[in-house]
Image (cartoon, rainbow, N blue to C red):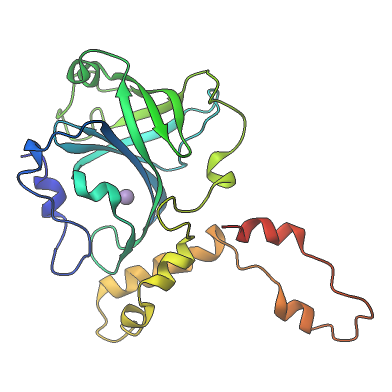
Length: 257
Ligand code: MN
Protein backbone atom coordinates (compact mmCIF):
# COMPACT_ATOMS: atom_id res chain seq x y z
CA UNK A 1 0.00 0.00 0.00
CA UNK A 2 1.28 3.37 -1.04
CA UNK A 3 1.00 5.22 2.28
CA UNK A 4 1.78 2.33 4.64
CA UNK A 5 5.31 3.49 5.47
CA UNK A 6 4.16 7.09 5.85
CA UNK A 7 1.47 6.05 8.37
CA UNK A 8 3.64 3.54 10.20
CA UNK A 9 6.12 6.29 11.12
CA UNK A 10 3.52 8.56 12.71
CA UNK A 11 1.10 8.70 15.63
CA UNK A 12 -1.76 10.82 14.28
CA UNK A 13 -3.04 11.54 17.78
CA UNK A 14 0.21 13.43 18.37
CA UNK A 15 1.05 15.10 15.07
CA UNK A 16 -0.89 17.75 13.14
CA UNK A 17 0.14 16.10 9.84
CA UNK A 18 -2.67 14.52 7.77
CA UNK A 19 -3.17 10.74 7.90
CA UNK A 20 -4.14 10.71 4.25
CA UNK A 21 -7.49 9.79 2.79
CA UNK A 22 -7.57 6.16 1.78
CA UNK A 23 -9.88 7.17 -1.05
CA UNK A 24 -7.40 9.74 -2.31
CA UNK A 25 -6.39 7.44 -5.12
CA UNK A 26 -9.77 8.00 -6.73
CA UNK A 27 -9.27 11.76 -6.76
CA UNK A 28 -8.41 13.13 -10.17
CA UNK A 29 -6.86 16.56 -10.08
CA UNK A 30 -7.14 18.68 -13.22
CA UNK A 31 -3.42 19.42 -13.01
CA UNK A 32 -0.64 17.51 -11.30
CA UNK A 33 0.32 19.09 -7.99
CA UNK A 34 3.88 19.66 -6.85
CA UNK A 35 5.38 21.26 -3.78
CA UNK A 36 8.61 21.75 -1.89
CA UNK A 37 8.46 21.72 1.90
CA UNK A 38 11.44 23.17 3.76
CA UNK A 39 11.76 20.93 6.79
CA UNK A 40 13.83 21.75 9.82
CA UNK A 41 14.13 18.38 11.58
CA UNK A 42 17.22 16.50 12.76
CA UNK A 43 18.77 18.09 9.67
CA UNK A 44 17.49 20.86 7.43
CA UNK A 45 16.27 19.56 4.08
CA UNK A 46 13.75 20.34 1.35
CA UNK A 47 11.09 17.74 0.57
CA UNK A 48 10.38 17.77 -3.17
CA UNK A 49 6.99 16.18 -3.90
CA UNK A 50 5.16 15.53 -7.16
CA UNK A 51 1.66 14.14 -7.53
CA UNK A 52 1.38 10.85 -9.36
CA UNK A 53 -1.23 8.12 -9.20
CA UNK A 54 -3.03 9.53 -6.13
CA UNK A 55 -0.01 10.13 -3.89
CA UNK A 56 2.92 12.51 -3.64
CA UNK A 57 6.15 10.90 -4.80
CA UNK A 58 8.79 12.36 -2.51
CA UNK A 59 12.49 13.12 -2.47
CA UNK A 60 14.42 14.74 0.39
CA UNK A 61 16.89 17.27 -0.98
CA UNK A 62 19.43 18.19 1.73
CA UNK A 63 20.66 21.41 0.10
CA UNK A 64 17.42 22.33 -1.61
CA UNK A 65 16.76 22.83 -5.33
CA UNK A 66 19.21 24.87 -7.40
CA UNK A 67 18.11 26.79 -10.49
CA UNK A 68 21.71 26.67 -11.74
CA UNK A 69 22.05 23.75 -14.21
CA UNK A 70 25.67 23.32 -13.12
CA UNK A 71 24.61 22.55 -9.55
CA UNK A 72 23.23 19.02 -9.24
CA UNK A 73 21.47 18.42 -5.94
CA UNK A 74 21.30 15.07 -4.18
CA UNK A 75 17.69 13.95 -3.76
CA UNK A 76 16.98 10.92 -1.58
CA UNK A 77 13.85 9.07 -2.66
CA UNK A 78 11.62 8.66 0.41
CA UNK A 79 8.18 7.19 1.05
CA UNK A 80 5.07 8.44 -0.74
CA UNK A 81 3.02 11.04 1.10
CA UNK A 82 -0.73 11.73 0.97
CA UNK A 83 -1.93 14.39 -1.46
CA UNK A 84 -3.25 16.51 1.44
CA UNK A 85 0.25 16.65 2.90
CA UNK A 86 1.22 18.97 0.08
CA UNK A 87 -0.50 21.94 1.71
CA UNK A 88 0.83 21.23 5.19
CA UNK A 89 2.83 23.82 7.06
CA UNK A 90 3.38 23.89 10.81
CA UNK A 91 5.11 22.44 13.80
CA UNK A 92 5.49 18.71 14.33
CA UNK A 93 5.83 18.69 18.12
CA UNK A 94 7.15 15.17 18.53
CA UNK A 95 7.80 11.86 16.87
CA UNK A 96 8.92 11.24 13.30
CA UNK A 97 10.10 14.40 11.57
CA UNK A 98 9.70 16.53 14.72
CA UNK A 99 10.47 20.13 13.87
CA UNK A 100 9.04 22.79 11.59
CA UNK A 101 7.62 22.38 8.09
CA UNK A 102 7.39 25.39 5.77
CA UNK A 103 5.55 25.29 2.44
CA UNK A 104 8.47 26.70 0.46
CA UNK A 105 7.03 26.34 -3.04
CA UNK A 106 3.83 25.03 -4.58
CA UNK A 107 2.40 24.71 -8.06
CA UNK A 108 1.78 22.21 -10.83
CA UNK A 109 4.02 19.89 -12.83
CA UNK A 110 3.89 18.15 -16.17
CA UNK A 111 5.99 15.18 -17.22
CA UNK A 112 8.10 15.64 -20.34
CA UNK A 113 7.44 12.02 -21.19
CA UNK A 114 4.39 9.95 -22.08
CA UNK A 115 4.98 7.28 -19.45
CA UNK A 116 5.80 8.47 -15.93
CA UNK A 117 6.11 4.94 -14.50
CA UNK A 118 8.55 3.92 -17.22
CA UNK A 119 10.59 7.08 -16.59
CA UNK A 120 10.70 6.35 -12.85
CA UNK A 121 11.66 2.76 -13.54
CA UNK A 122 14.42 3.93 -15.81
CA UNK A 123 15.50 6.54 -13.24
CA UNK A 124 15.22 9.54 -15.56
CA UNK A 125 12.15 11.71 -15.11
CA UNK A 126 12.09 14.92 -17.10
CA UNK A 127 9.43 17.40 -16.08
CA UNK A 128 8.22 20.95 -16.22
CA UNK A 129 7.49 22.80 -13.00
CA UNK A 130 5.21 25.77 -12.62
CA UNK A 131 5.61 26.99 -9.06
CA UNK A 132 6.23 30.40 -7.52
CA UNK A 133 9.97 29.82 -7.21
CA UNK A 134 10.76 26.84 -9.41
CA UNK A 135 9.79 26.92 -13.06
CA UNK A 136 10.70 25.46 -16.40
CA UNK A 137 12.37 22.18 -17.27
CA UNK A 138 13.99 19.90 -14.65
CA UNK A 139 15.11 16.30 -14.38
CA UNK A 140 15.33 13.75 -11.60
CA UNK A 141 18.03 11.18 -12.38
CA UNK A 142 18.75 8.09 -10.30
CA UNK A 143 22.46 7.78 -9.62
CA UNK A 144 22.59 4.04 -8.98
CA UNK A 145 20.41 1.03 -8.37
CA UNK A 146 19.14 0.71 -11.89
CA UNK A 147 16.99 -2.26 -10.93
CA UNK A 148 13.99 -0.01 -10.47
CA UNK A 149 11.78 1.20 -7.65
CA UNK A 150 11.18 -0.86 -4.55
CA UNK A 151 14.39 -2.83 -4.85
CA UNK A 152 16.84 -3.54 -2.07
CA UNK A 153 16.67 -1.11 0.81
CA UNK A 154 19.68 1.04 -0.03
CA UNK A 155 19.27 0.54 -3.72
CA UNK A 156 18.00 3.25 -5.98
CA UNK A 157 17.26 5.85 -3.34
CA UNK A 158 19.91 8.32 -4.47
CA UNK A 159 18.79 10.63 -7.24
CA UNK A 160 19.94 14.02 -8.50
CA UNK A 161 17.62 16.98 -9.02
CA UNK A 162 18.93 19.08 -11.90
CA UNK A 163 17.67 22.23 -13.61
CA UNK A 164 17.77 22.19 -17.38
CA UNK A 165 19.05 25.24 -19.24
CA UNK A 166 16.13 27.48 -20.16
CA UNK A 167 14.80 30.97 -19.46
CA UNK A 168 14.07 29.97 -15.82
CA UNK A 169 17.64 28.91 -15.05
CA UNK A 170 20.18 31.22 -13.45
CA UNK A 171 23.04 31.56 -11.01
CA UNK A 172 20.84 33.02 -8.29
CA UNK A 173 20.75 30.94 -5.10
CA UNK A 174 16.98 30.53 -4.88
CA UNK A 175 17.04 29.09 -1.33
CA UNK A 176 18.88 32.21 -0.10
CA UNK A 177 16.97 34.65 -2.28
CA UNK A 178 13.51 33.34 -1.38
CA UNK A 179 13.83 31.57 2.00
CA UNK A 180 10.28 31.95 3.27
CA UNK A 181 6.86 30.33 2.95
CA UNK A 182 4.65 30.75 -0.11
CA UNK A 183 1.65 29.94 2.13
CA UNK A 184 2.12 32.30 5.08
CA UNK A 185 5.12 34.35 3.89
CA UNK A 186 6.62 33.39 7.24
CA UNK A 187 10.08 32.26 8.23
CA UNK A 188 10.61 29.20 10.45
CA UNK A 189 10.53 31.54 13.46
CA UNK A 190 7.25 33.07 12.36
CA UNK A 191 5.69 29.66 11.75
CA UNK A 192 6.83 28.60 15.21
CA UNK A 193 5.32 31.75 16.72
CA UNK A 194 1.99 30.99 15.02
CA UNK A 195 1.72 27.58 16.61
CA UNK A 196 1.15 28.53 20.25
CA UNK A 197 4.73 27.76 21.23
CA UNK A 198 3.88 27.89 24.93
CA UNK A 199 2.11 24.55 24.57
CA UNK A 200 5.13 22.61 23.48
CA UNK A 201 7.93 24.76 24.85
CA UNK A 202 6.46 24.31 28.33
CA UNK A 203 6.91 20.57 27.85
CA UNK A 204 10.66 20.95 27.86
CA UNK A 205 12.11 18.78 30.55
CA UNK A 206 8.63 18.20 31.86
CA UNK A 207 8.06 14.54 31.12
CA UNK A 208 11.61 13.86 30.03
CA UNK A 209 10.40 12.33 26.80
CA UNK A 210 12.88 11.94 24.01
CA UNK A 211 10.39 13.62 21.68
CA UNK A 212 10.54 16.88 23.62
CA UNK A 213 14.30 16.69 23.58
CA UNK A 214 14.25 16.17 19.86
CA UNK A 215 12.30 19.36 19.19
CA UNK A 216 14.55 21.27 21.58
CA UNK A 217 17.58 19.99 19.70
CA UNK A 218 15.99 20.98 16.40
CA UNK A 219 15.32 24.50 17.62
CA UNK A 220 18.96 24.91 18.59
CA UNK A 221 19.76 24.80 14.86
CA UNK A 222 17.48 27.72 14.11
CA UNK A 223 20.01 30.43 15.01
CA UNK A 224 22.33 29.15 12.31
CA UNK A 225 19.62 28.88 9.67
CA UNK A 226 17.79 32.10 10.51
CA UNK A 227 20.26 34.31 12.41
CA UNK A 228 18.71 36.73 14.89
CA UNK A 229 19.50 40.24 13.65
CA UNK A 230 21.39 42.44 16.09
CA UNK A 231 19.26 45.58 15.94
CA UNK A 232 17.59 47.48 18.76
CA UNK A 233 19.62 46.11 21.65
CA UNK A 234 22.92 46.81 19.89
CA UNK A 235 21.88 50.41 19.25
CA UNK A 236 20.81 50.90 22.85
CA UNK A 237 24.17 49.63 24.04
CA UNK A 238 25.80 52.78 22.66
CA UNK A 239 23.61 55.62 23.97
CA UNK A 240 26.46 58.13 23.68
CA UNK A 241 26.46 57.87 19.90
CA UNK A 242 26.18 61.49 18.71
CA UNK A 243 24.45 60.74 15.43
CA UNK A 244 21.61 58.54 14.32
CA UNK A 245 22.35 54.84 14.20
CA UNK A 246 23.45 53.61 10.81
CA UNK A 247 21.04 51.19 9.16
CA UNK A 248 22.24 47.66 9.33
CA UNK A 249 22.06 46.60 5.74
CA UNK A 250 23.71 43.24 6.24
CA UNK A 251 21.13 41.97 8.69
CA UNK A 252 18.18 43.68 7.06
CA UNK A 253 18.33 41.34 4.11
CA UNK A 254 17.97 38.25 6.23
CA UNK A 255 14.84 39.45 7.99
CA UNK A 256 12.98 40.35 4.80
CA UNK A 257 9.72 38.49 4.43
MN1 MN B 1 11.14 15.86 5.61
